[in-house]
Image 1 (cartoon, helix red, strand yellow):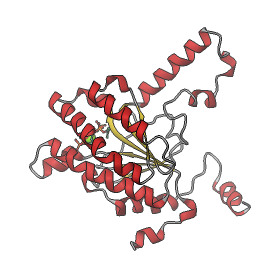
Image 2 (tube, helix red, strand yellow):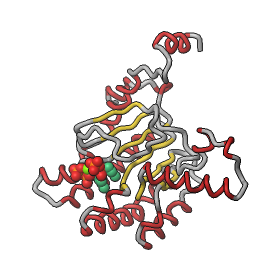
Image 3 (cartoon, protein in one colour):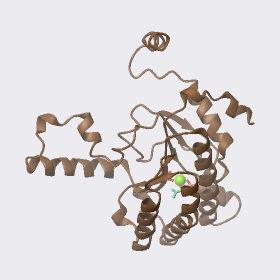
Image 4 (cartoon, protein in one colour):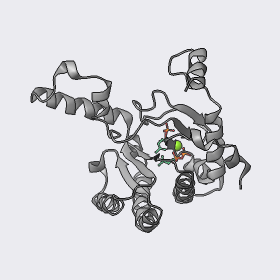
Length: 253
Ligand code: IPE
Ligand code: IPE
Ligand code: MG
């Protein structure tokens, strides 16, 4: 068994891991290949990390696969990514079922081409009874889009007299987000070397531990994930309190 995996405290696993899968294009370029070649190889990392999370008993894994801003990329890349998405889902749905994994999607589904919407809907339906890992794909997603949408929805409900302005609070806002059924991620990993959030889960990452690695997404494997979790478990999460308060509350638990 991997020594890194042995170092992980199974009692202190994050419930929810979020990942910005970045670096596919540069990985391909470094090999003298086309960007799509990188995306294609990124799918192998998705398989490996999903499997790793399921094996550990992680409850939620959110993967940032395509952002609102990514629509601005060259048409050929966008089309290639959509086709890759559909062919991957088609191929993997049986494995998801076999491993008791439930698929979810967050993002502006209406923006996706019809064939992708159809494939996704079917996969959501087929996996909806699964009770193991919740695999959440962020597609045509961005935090600002999500928050704008929530604001619009809340405004409509206020206008229709369904909610009172004084009842708007954090809990209510959360109930209007795409992630309303999931806990906030405790850790956010970004591969590929950049140290930024790029419009991912802006509300939900408020207290997430951020972990940035140089490893390009197509090279990211279970061992890299274990390394991130070990790092996460070594951190002191204070949530605004003092270090003393936090250690005391752990000791008295
Ligand atoms: C991440 O890899 C995948 C998507 C954004 C769809 P990139 O395509 O952003 O790869 P780099 O950052 O250009 O290397
Ligand atoms: C973030 O990566 C989006 C995804 C991984 C899906 P980008 O490559 O689009 O982010 P920037 O442009 O470097 O910030
Ligand atoms: Mg990138």
